Amino acid sequence: MQFSEKFLYHIWDAQHLQKKLQTISGKSLKIMFQGQWNTDAGPDFKNAIIQFEGEVLRGDVEVHLETHDWNSHHHHEDKNYNNVILHIVFKHNGQYPFTVSENGEKIEILELQNYLDKNITKLLKEHKHKKFVVEDKFCSFFAGLDNESLQLLLLKSGSERLEKKIKRFGAELFFSDFNQLFMQGLFESLGYSKNKFQMLQLALKFPYSKLKEFYRNGMTKDELLTLWLCSSDLISHLPKTFPREFVSKWKELYQKQGFSKEIFDLDWKLFRIRPINHPAVRILQIIDLIYENLENPLFNNVLKVFSFTDKKIKMNKFKGRIYSLLQVKGDESSYSFLPEKYQIGKSRVDIIIINILIPLAILYARKMSYSELDNVAKKVYQEFHGLPGNFITQFMERFMSDTQRKIVSKKAIYQQGILKLYFDFCQHHNCEMCVQFKKELISSM
Image (tube, rainbow, N blue to C red; front, side, top):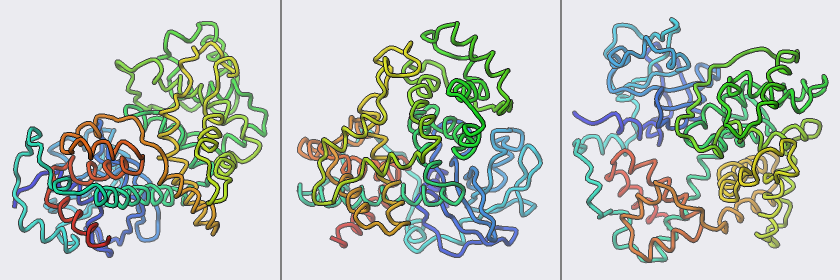
């Protein structure tokens, strides 16, 4: 049977697996969060959360067709794979029940071929590897759909994508609290595609609880900034817009402060990055928000912006609250040397609302049994306007009619539904499973 690793990525990402799983070594495991698809160098999925025999670990996941591919790809000599906690293979053909990393750690192996769910098993029997032709503009998902059916399907698909985000934050909650999750979400979102994992790691290296402790012990805002910039070595790669006298002062202050001297190798991706998207610029954009909320809970800000009754939601007022919270004008910032254009743009704030604030608000509502907050957050999600397109939505538009494109652009939930289709099926060239997904959605309408 021949198929690509990308097909396995889909199986893992969509969790087409049986509920009871066991590693080659005999350990039972539970997938709390499968991780984020990594389009850069390194492991295939980042920041997965997996329970092994009751012990919960956070780390990376690597996917291969066969066990020996680990050594064939020289991962056993690459320190970038030292954070892998699970090696996924379709077929185990190794001599030992573990994979060994560069630093000598044993990594559990999960062999997929015996744990696939019924739907994917049936598809595998029919599956033949074939080249995907992007020039072919026909797509079975969009073909023959009337406008009403398209909207209903994308509402369901977009809602499923939201639930996946909620599940991810719910798994993260095992290690932290809502203040930390909000801070992590901000850092990750402001890292954009190139540095989102690096920014997330920085937020994990200095968790909100640790920053509160530093704050109680007298940490100033400048000292917080030096911790972020110097410990991550961003201080050595700042944009030219940062005045030299500030940089010199920060370096000196870092040497004097006594909170932390640990240095992290975060492998920043700064080549050809726009100055406005530089991680150091993004850190300056949110330092006031973080520092000023070390005394009182940071997450309270999220709860305040959702303080509507579900029957009286005013979207303009809601967005105004968010923009006021996250968009600090240059002359109001503690670091006013940044040009006005370097503040967080409204389009980025909108993305933070969809990807971070709404999932966190719903998760909090469910944990605390606040049905009204749950309803408000869902209604905001359903009514939120369309976001600017990206390369994924532009790619997907190739398969839509003009009318379908207009419909999708109107609401964020429709666009999120499109993103689910792309990440679950299109990027893996898995048209068969997409057609099956469409049939399941239609049957549930």
